[in-house]
Structure formats: structure tokens, C-alpha cells
Image (cartoon, rainbow, N blue to C red; front, side, top):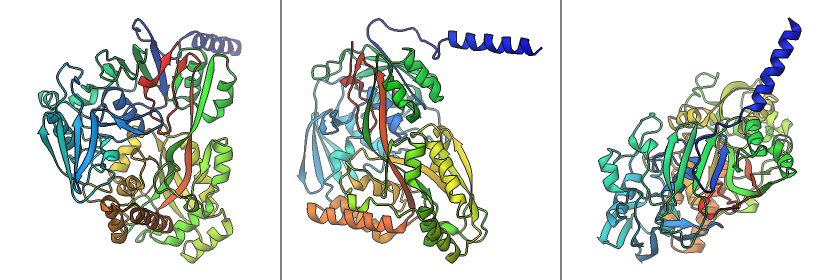
Length: 532
């Protein structure tokens, strides 16, 4: 019997090796780029979810008025120019001759519609344009965006609002964005009609998404890529992702596991491109609820006591996590934004020291010498080694008596849970598409008001800080604005409503046949790529 089992196991293993690691779809003629990462796009609705990989999907088929160069400079896209015509009005001149994928014309009416759609309560993009009071068509080529007060960074913000066809949205009953947290299913979730460099061909959630070259894209002259089709396959298992790359079944892996980076580098025909990402990974704490929903302390909230938050900070040995969990591919962080963001200061990016004795003393002073229990919500398919980071944090907090129940799950469950504020303690990463600190504050620290604070799940509210965040939007004197940003960062660091962990480092692994620049926002722009 034992011999039979061994033979059966060997046969099963041989069959597994003989099968393709990734099911191959029927490929188009020409250059086909096959790529993977650990999770899937959350939705194809371009105004529903402001999540990094989901934005990657949108960037292939949709565009904004303002675009990005490969080195993340803002450049003309569907608008050819923009300027402030007075303190509260920005004027955008639209590119002429642009077509949506269905062949219809891109018009000023589509701009008005798209901006207003992105302001809808269902939209995760509403915070970008919370200052927008109105948007008006002036003529066929001109749109005015009016803001509540002066807003010097509106072009940075509106770069992230994708333009949709008003007629297509009305025809398909998707005038409003999908409510992702309520798992709403709409036509825009699985279908697109943008103006971008690629056209959606097939969409199978969690299986594959295929886009084809848009032969009528206005940008082809300046970006003459040679990719005819792109096949995206989410591959959850790290070993399978790497094996598929090594075997030639994939041309590009967005998130090669840190433990496999050197192995891939040594493999013939492959290359790894590395850069520091404009994204910081950190832990959020519910500091505002009277009692923690997922804690075992009744009648009060231990996170409301700053001494507890400070103790947790001192108990997390981030240098050890960076070296042992991240294999050195992490930049230890002391603030929740990274170099490359306006307002980042190295002097503020310093962690409280790892000091277990001090942490234990703080816990004792706060009345929690014996610790307490808490659940930690963590994604396991969004950030580099996210679950491994959480596991390390669980062990470190145990040393000061905090018993952490780790709930690691897919981002498709993790993010809706957070957006329903159904959490007490959670891991999140935050990139900054506007490259300005205001983006971090307005999403993560501002008191939720229906527009701002949409990712502030900490229940933290500070009117003084809110006033400073609003001031960042209206202050036109650069020196005064920078002072506001500096002071706001000082307050946020001192309050410790978030526990900074690290600035993420990217490793993009790809075939040597693929020539594509690595981009620090972790959003591959395939129209910059060439294939041999």
C-alpha cells in the first residue's frame, strides 16, 4: 500500500509539472504581453475604487485630462493645456479629434459628466475633487472647473479622474459609480468605454483580463508601442507566479516575492528592475470609538490612550521586519508618506526607537500591564509580504501582553470591511498619486464629512488639523503652504493614530525581451513598453 501511495504521489507530481501553470487563452496574432500579480482588479468602473492595481487596469483603457510621463511628471492628456483664470477657476483646453472606443467623440459634455460622476457618494475618487464647486462647459474645446476657494493643486488631483462617455453611461444605466462596499453589480463593472491606449476585450473576474491595442489612440504617434494584446492573470500563489515567469509563460510579474528576487535575477533571459515606491505601509488604530468592536476590553477603548499607542510603536521592531521579513527590500518609516511626495521631510521620517522596556512601562502606566486582546485585519494579496508583516507584528505585540488575533484575507474582502468601518486595528498602504501631502491628510486624517476623510477609519477627529488640511487647498503662498504641511505632519506624527512601518520597495521582474520602464507609483504604463 505504501509503495502504491508513493507511486501515485510521484505520478501526480509529474502530471502537475507537465501541465501549464497558467491556463493559456487563445492569443492574438502579433506581440502579446502576458503578466500577473497576486490579486485582481477590484472593478472596471473607473470611479468606484481608488486602489492601486485597480487604477492600473483603468489606466489601460481610460484617461484623465492630465496624464503622467514615465518619470511621473504631469503632462497633457485629454487636455492640451490648463491654467488658472482667477483664484477659484481652472480652465482646461480639450484635445480635439479624440474618440471613445465605441467610435463616439470625446466632448466637453463628457468632462462635465465625468467630474460630477466622480463626486458621487459611491465614488472612492470624490476626495480628490472635494474642493470642486462646479464644472462647466464653456465651448466645445473649453471646460472651467470652479473650486471652493483657491486650489493650487487641482491639476494634480484631476489627473486621477478618468473620463467616461456620458452617452455610454446613460445608455447602460451606469450614470452613478458602483457601490463597491455593497458589492453592487453594474454594466461598468465588467465593461469599459474609454479613450485610452488599449480596448477591453474580455473580462473574467479573478481569472483573466485581456485588452487589445487601440489603433486609433491619439497618443500612438508619441508612444509608438508595439503591443497588440495584453493578458493579465491574477496568480495568488507566489511560487506559481515565479514558476510561470521562469518557464516563459509570463513576460512580466509586478510583485515578484522578495525571497525570489535574486533567483530571478540569476535566471537567463530575465531581469529585475527595482525602485522605491511612493507608498507607505502602516497600521491604523480605532482611537475614537468608546469601545473597540474587536477588542476584549469592555467599557473603554485602550487605543484612546496615547500611552498604549506609543507602547505599541516602541514594541514593533521595524528594522527586524525589514531585514527578516522583507529581505532588506523595505525602507523603515517614521511617517506615513514617502520621499517623492511634496511635504515629505527626512527629519520627520524617524521612528520612535524599538524599546520593549519602555513599551511595557507605558502599558503599565496606562493600566494594561497584563495587556488585552484585539483583532488585526490584514490583506494577504495587496502589498509586498503583507501577511508576513502582520504575522511579525502579532509576535512583537505579544511581548507587551497584547494578544492579537490575525485576520488575513484577500483585498476583495479586506477593503470592503475597512470601508464599512468594520475594524478596530488594520494594515493599509497608501500611495500618493497627486505627489502632495494634502492627498494623505484629506483621505487618512481629515474628519469624514461625506467628501473628505473617506479612508479615515480611525474615528480620529481634530478640528485644528482639519483647518490646516483645508488651508493647504487655498493657500497660494508656497512658503505659507509648506509651513501648514510641516505643522500638520508634526501633529499627525505626535498623535500616533497610525503606526508607520515602511516605505515599500518595488521589484518588477520581466523577460529581457520586454523593454518597459519601472514607475515609482507601481502602475505599469504599457504604452511605454516595447517587445522584441
